[in-house]
Image 1 (cartoon, rainbow over the protein chains, first blue to last red):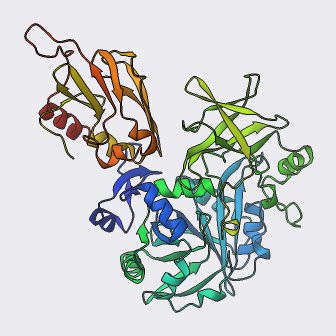
Image 2: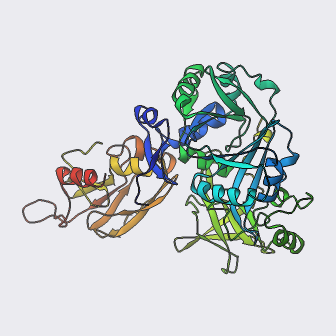
Image 3: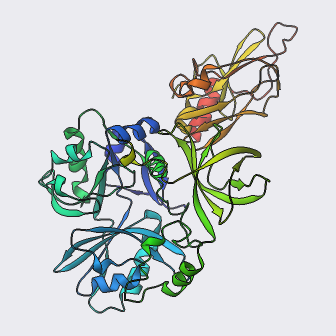
Length: 369
Length: 133
């Protein structure tokens, strides 16, 4: 990409904190502030603060907004109660994944849904939503990305810290729910969602209020709230077994391969883009299975490395791999042919290293405490 | 970014310290910061022969893996076994406790270690990293 990367509203804050910045999906983002392992561990044990203002925010509003989204995505947004959220996907007519999304139903009268897209896919999602929603009279699609800041606070201490600067009763807020309220005396949409495998919240606010919200959270947090960058975000989501678009998800896989067939609501009455192809795929079963692997050696499996059978034949490919700070060993997610059984090896730059199959996720907070 | 004046450097971001016929090798502060947290270092075996400019090990970090190149020719006499338990020493003290291996190098008739051509001075290495942005 030759064009200048976009800045989030918190660029100056990251620079003051001495962050190592990196270009990601056309945005200049903090990769790490000091040690990404320390940032990862802080989210597991205390709390971490993330600038996610690169994510796309697209509002679908007006009468018919729910019906329009029911046609556009594989989930069933119109069935969401106001104040609830759902993880879903936008698929192509052939069932391939164009993006994974979180949709928040922010209101029913008037109807308002907030669709959160990956930064790299925001333009595609916006275009598809505009096209797919245009067949439903009354539904309107607006890109609010530039006007919206997104700050996530994640970790076991997140609720306590955020409570100090919001008027919302966070104890009453369920996982995958959200509410309008104020944070640092500024209007915000606050949701109990995240991408780390920990309890936590995402705060959507006006771009111009980001610095105030960030600072207030920093000051409300005891030692243990640390700013965390994209490097920690990636290892946290990998431990939590959460897919990343471009790694586990893409136009050449359907939700079924990713083990996420449950997001495809074939039971919803409305037609939707991809229904026919996805129904056929649901009936025939997945061709490959997303599999968790823990390496026995200290060499780290990386995206694109081959997974080998005991006989040495190629039976799959690593989609994401990293040293896991929590497990203390390299972990990977890989697509493996249906029916292939271990033991597996991973071709790490020409040398086969053994790896054990493990159930996903690698880390489940409900089993830790 | 620290670039000690008394060391020599490679374009692949290793440093080398010469003491008589012994050359100590590690990776630079710039390299360590670029890699992020180092989680595993694979080093050449003691007694093996390394060749200047050839890979002789690997440095694994959270986000990537990099080949480790030997800056000199010679026989490996010692490796830093501390890195096995604490690879983070590479980030914490890249020029000190984070050293990686030692090589016995040939010494010329003048008593000076015979170094391969192309090693950079601290000034040259500093310019290299600054021009890389």
